Image (cartoon, rainbow, N blue to C red; front, top):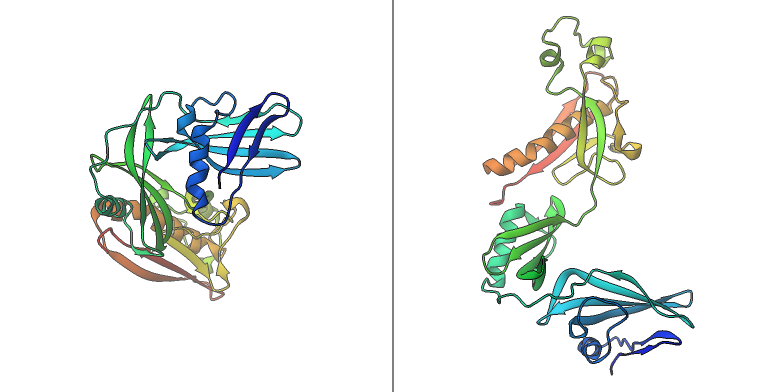
Length: 311
């Protein structure tokens, strides 16, 4: 079975795609596009357009194309055509390239590409085996063959896309596919004595706030927290006895020393910031730390796991 495309200036583009559940139909879809006329104004030549799907919404069909060269998908090169019944088709998105030629073939094998990608991101325990597929990455009017390696880490929880040059073996790009956010806080960095240059006027006083201690805080950015604003990232997670520590929009600037959450914010920031340093030095550290507030109301527990590429 095939998907056929025809251009009709009266009713616009009619995309009649028979997408069956069998995997046998998938190659036929792409082959049909090469034999048909290109959608309106798409920059890529007809032979490089592969139909990837047709969807419909409120009487309008949306036809999705992917650019391929020498049978390999081109990263980020796609087009979408919208066709409402009785109107001329519109080109909604066109990220294709008009003169993209095939690059020299790959010389790096899949196993070496995966190993290179795992080493680059410091992979620990995986949720699933790493996957790798050949693709092309545009470079101006040219392209290079790359291995697109997908890594699903379990500890810490991560999901990376790593592009490895399929000839030189160099890592071209690393993208974190998990959504991460940043927040803001005011904490001790590194501590009030260093910040103020003296111990004078500093007293614990049962974990209470004071003008001196509050003024000794430093504004910082909390990197890699969860999209919900919780102190949970790939390298650290800060917990109170009641569970995760969260703030709307990741804004912890109002949290002061008297709050049970202050130690959690402090612990998260310093552990998360130390992670790049430990990676660069090859540190192999796995630890669980607990910080007791001098107030007996609660316990702040911070669990961290820092692993080097070798662990």
